[in-house]
Image (cartoon, rainbow, N blue to C red; front, side):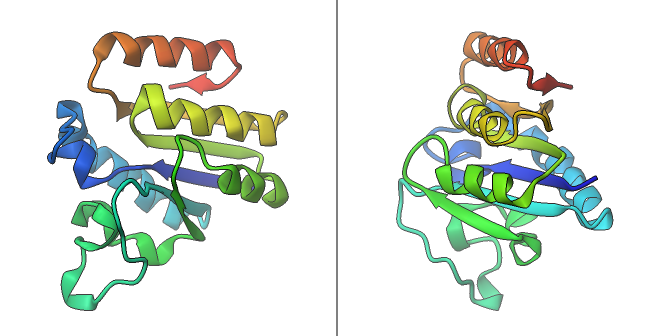
Length: 164
């Protein structure tokens, strides 16, 4: 079984900067646990990054955690990523194509924001891999709007995306 973990837009700007989604701060440990499990299982790890601000794809060793606007708890895993997708829109067509070509059987998605980028990438993943198990971990995604968060999870479930 070919597995992948997709970490969507887990960036400082959503956690504590201008948009500050409060539940996201508490998710850091759960997200890093998912990443560690992915690495231990030799599954493929992917990151998407909202390119709404200028980022540098390469990091200087002494600036770990500062590049690409991701918190250090997550950015330290960038070197393990099969690929990092900088995206200018909610969903990444490049990610969907990569998943399709990779013929994954199981894709788990975590990250931010549940009712915007997570749902967009989950739908693209399901479209790219209609027979695959696409999973969104509800404890590892959040929104600044609790009502929209619940609705997004319900919509994804209705699209045969498994919500755990």
